[in-house]
Length: 464
View 1 (tube, rainbow, N blue to C red):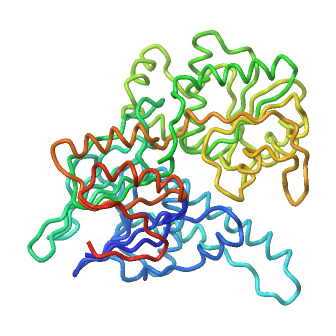
View 2: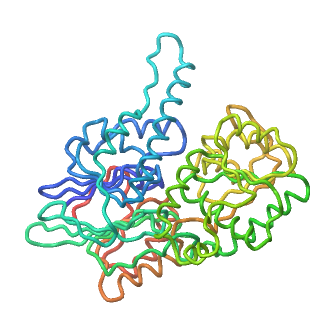
View 3: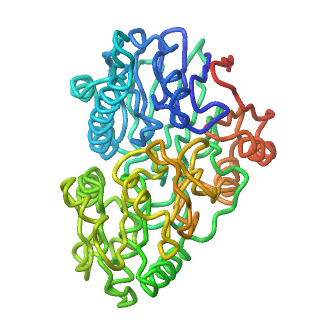
């Protein structure tokens, strides 16, 4: 059996790993590379995995860096099933259709900037590709085995990263021997709002694990609620506004959940709060649909609050006109808007109108990839570039990493020790992490593995 790492190898984005047996070729994730525009475009333009020859895709969850190239895979000839959980299928359809529309808009914008006679820029895929792809999705329930073939079966376990996210357990028979392969996807944390804790599995022959925060310890998620309150109170006291760039999927719902709790506890000042992301609004409806899969705190809250994602001060913004009007508002407000790395979407316009005022606050609540606007803000540069123009960064920058949906060192240590308690971890591969994080986690994982962990680089292959 051979593993080849086509993405999220030596870096965080572009998750894509190929398992090849004597009979099958199965792709784990098919994510989009993000970061510096030219480099990301180059990596995203073509595949090395031979899409038309794949027998299946197993999708861990619906973040774009894990699912974002699936329609492109379909465009290039893939016609087999995509296996994932039901919530992931519902979310992926929204995420991918939104991505396709952005692809079209970006292509038209870039084409207008080309010299006369230059071939137009083509989108990576279109809404038609998304529609074709979605017909091949096959949702599976957690904990139930599915026979992909007589010698390959899989089942999903909750990963605790976002709604629907899954750890994939595979049993693959080859030459009379059964090997157990575990792919974490993005492993979640314990005790974060909304989500159940990651499931614990018992041992494996091959582990493919993410390593995003393999060298970090997050602040407790429980501190975030009070930090949000402090930041809002500080801004309100000087008539400033709070801009929260947040991924439409996961982070927006977590922030709204905390603000709902603060409102119920009568701690929140009477300041208007806006979720300015049509995608986040649609995704929140899916969270409501799957509320029985969320954690015990949500179940308790629903006994006295019928909507944990809505309260009197909160408005979900719809039209572009309403979004533009937010930048003409006077007085304090809170705006939660996508994208989380500030690279596209309505939040870029809100930042353009807010970064020069020292009474305002920008709240970063997740990982900011290199070369993104979010990373520029996180580094508190004197000037930041927005829409090809330099703006002085005078607004306060607050980084709240307690809401990260990725496991940290303590979570990994717990998960590895539980996994190896009554069994063993054979060979391990660390993906989805920058070099320092992956190297630190490899050092930790060495104590739980039969062999030294491997940090594969892009396009590297290994026999296992």
